Length: 261
Image (cartoon, helix red, strand yellow):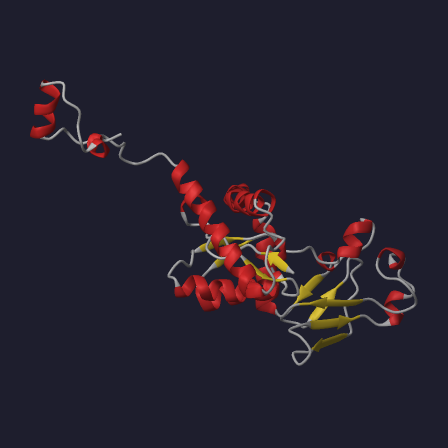
């Protein structure tokens, strides 16, 4: 199986396709570093790279800026997906995180008892409240389930602040206008998938499938370049002296392909 990925060059004319596919088990977040590596090798790295939500993680936002000086433009996932879906429960964003004092304050003003950093498992910090704080709390039904106390997971400080900035930027009108430029990439992928059936291979094996995708991408690029208006309109060259001599005597040109038609 082959998965079409977001590997169009956003800075190329008409959203030209520069790379096409990965195997299905490869996640988008796993494919992105390789995409940036290939674009860097071709000297096509953009300063800003609009991508869809599948390619956005806070770690990749930080890594792309640090390793390639590329700003990823894409929607970060909301924290507490289950609580956001219910719309009646406290999410992580409802808690105030004080990194200097190493504590978290809940919406009802209670302060966490435990602050645990676990870099060995993942770049994650865990703040825990004590059951004596949560059991008598009137807001418990909108905060946590069961008999356990509330636990809040969040990223280290520099990643947490990067995540907060990304989410705030998504509400900005200028950010939305910038992200709208991704429509050209989406159009190229839609044409590749729906117009040329790129999700299905005519051949056996990844190598042959890759060749098929490369040829299809070249054909799309040629078609898009051909449809663009030329910068300098074509004008046929002036007839030679011999051709003018033939015209004055109503004689046909032997070299008809030189008529500029």
